[in-house]
Length: 232
Image: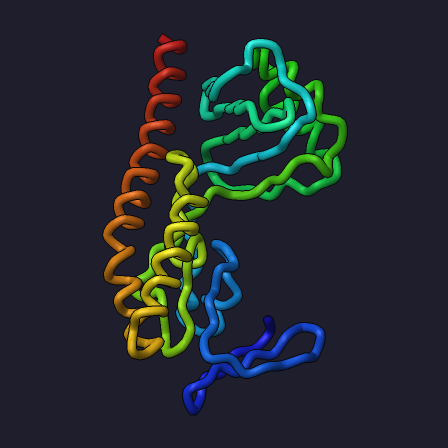
């Protein structure tokens, strides 16, 4: 989507391939860096949450990883999660000022950042084979006063992204979609459905945002305290 205008009870949308269309409503479910949000609802940018993160999956299960495990070090942590098909999901975080980690050489730099960790983190890192396996980005959040404008509404991370420390982002998006569908089916107008949707969902998603931010802050505080204790 490259353009969006609203007029006469419809939403006109232009796409990158040059095509266009008119729609009764538009649902922006396009993530924390939502194009729909910027075009129709708010130009508010995501806020940095104090850490950057590397995420990846390997087609193996390091020894001893049969449940969620999180290992902490000075200003950093590494988490491992067993997932389907004998695969393992890894998420690593580094607290501090944001920076860019280009794809070329990313695997070597990831190993250097966490070279002081022992098994099973070392086994996981050894099983990664190339830079392209690793997604990197800042941990961010977004907090909006309104999730809708006219016949455009935002759901999921486009509306209320939070730090991932509670693991609830996907669940909130699914709940949003179910509630929005229910309200659209029952409401007299689209605009009325959108208003009821935000009123019903904001207290719940706001709580998740608050607790996720708190958990992220506790993580940073614990890692800082641990580092200070080691120095003492």
